[in-house]
Length: 493
Image 1: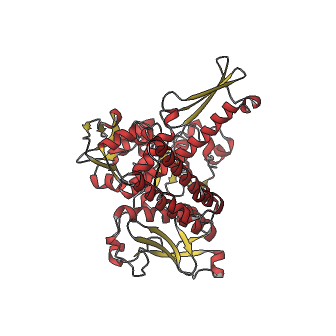
Image 2 (image 1 turned 90 degrees about the vertical axis):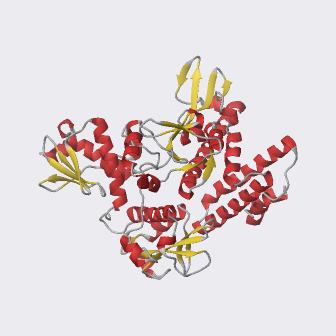
Image 3 (image 1 turned 135 degrees about the horizontal axis):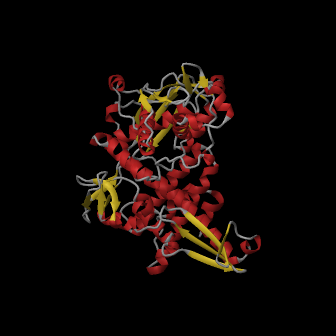
């Protein structure tokens, strides 16, 4: 009780680390104690978002150690196994048919859809209502149901990044554990949309995790003790069948919980192999300091005075450093920072490591972070040239979209989509989404905000407005004879 008070009132990191060391009670009381401690650690992590990157990172590390200690105390092999067991228990009450509460003739039902969405349905006398009447909201049972919905949404926000981390770190699990995860009402639907790698097999889990089905529809059984992991884009690239996986994902209309099959990947380049200890892939790009540091902070990077910006991988004993030409905390920081390069060191050391020594998945994910910052927080009025990885991903998405829709008047040439319309010929840049009439100047096509994108299909749940903008502009100009907007028609005629 004292530790819990210190965690909630003083945010004591020592108490967070120690929470998992205390012995658990016996029997069912011990199971409840374990679940309560797990929830305390998760709530500590959730409320950490209000702080800056440095404190957020130190609190995240304390919670990770606390969860490792709790897993050992409870007899779990590692924190991942503890997390899935606790998340399954947290969703147990809605696993079979959901929950319901009635008041004043209104029935409110809470359920998890096959797509792992939290659904709230409201009915009165068998007829659906758009919202819960204010008087009914005050009913204790309905209020409890609404609180349960909030908890489930928080659970979804924990599960999705946990799966993505498993992919990035190459976490393995057995066939028996896969079957357990597939039975989870939230984890199962997400996992069913992700490609897994086994011993000589790859595919989406089917039949409750008893088999994997590949892009050609072939199913291979999964043995109980077989080691599996989530496939990374680098695995699909190395397998030589990445386009087939992308085509299959699109044909199935799978919306993956995060980018996997269409993930941007960043293998080591020849220039980086020659430089050996530094990647200058993004050297010279100017970025806005506040926006860049906020974005990096949300992805686990920490800005340290007089040191720079780093991301620490405790399990691998590695640090990634993003270096700038400017000295930190100078007037230059107010106006802009210019990227120098990315280096890697052992934790607590300064000697740069050879880039070839860095695990390829880890290197790729670090470059993906930097690419995102360069794209989003660039300084100046002109968008930076998108990376080759981004261009390749958008090219693949566009090819599959055009094939599904039967559009045959678009061809991809380098980093542009060339369109032969009825009213003219056009080009759309796959990086910046800038559209041009050929010959002629730029076309002003105002992008639609994410919430108004309608039925434009993207095979991942991540927010990627620029990719959506590229696809929508290409499809619009490919069918220019259907355009009715006067402001656009004036530019085309």
